[in-house]
Image (cartoon, rainbow, N blue to C red; front, side, top):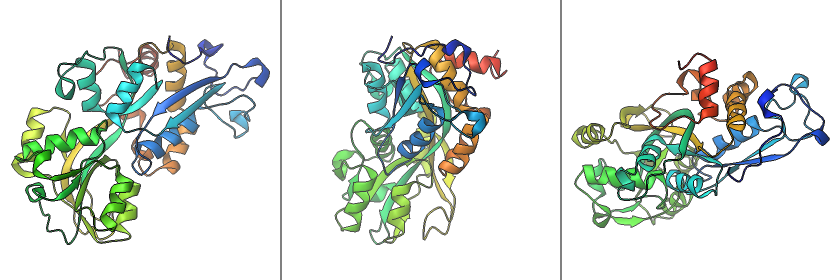
Length: 334
């Protein structure tokens, strides 16, 4: 069993019923997210709030919390997907958000985890939303394609992030590597600051659009999104089944007058097989109750894309038994 304390009486679920605070145990459940300027962290905060129901909360029927009785979920900032899967495996996090490709590679010991011990205890709770690869450049940097990054000052995000993994895959597909750019390893917020100060030409970020760091940057200086398309993008799609061609629509960011072609990958909420089945069942049920739906719709721009209908899309690792039982009851799996 992980660092979570088993929640007393969870078998009954009782998501909409409050019990006296004195009769409840308290369970803390951590969610590894990402940098504060991207999508994982703020959306993680919305989800943590939705599934929590601390002792003494006002009953759901009276407009209070409709989460899991006694649960206190906490969204923790992290370096991103790779950091999160490692954190779940080591017990640092009870759960975390991960790109679908990173989760699969970690589970199977393939891809960027080639040669490492497979993280065979990783389990999925839900697919959340599609993430889009942003290649953000100063408008005056002369960067019109990935090929133009050669010799430029480019942030690839921190090692341990899914963005860092994908940035290297993209560079390789276009015949480049870290050695061909002046590589920096900044999270999106600091990367935006460096770009404003004239110290950076471009940076990668994998996040649901609109993502806060890019919104803030585009409102302060002239930037552009560089397309990731053509033969290089198709080679990535052909080699890695988790990537798909997509667009970031015109108007998403200030000064963005046309759709920009890029690649997308799924964001997922994952946990460990060692987490209690009844707890994960209750958390999954809380994630998809009507009150959470309302919180997701107003809590973050990407929240509307988090739906029960797409909860199993693109998942390449096993479901946690608690989540699997919930989806079976909903008729989503046989």
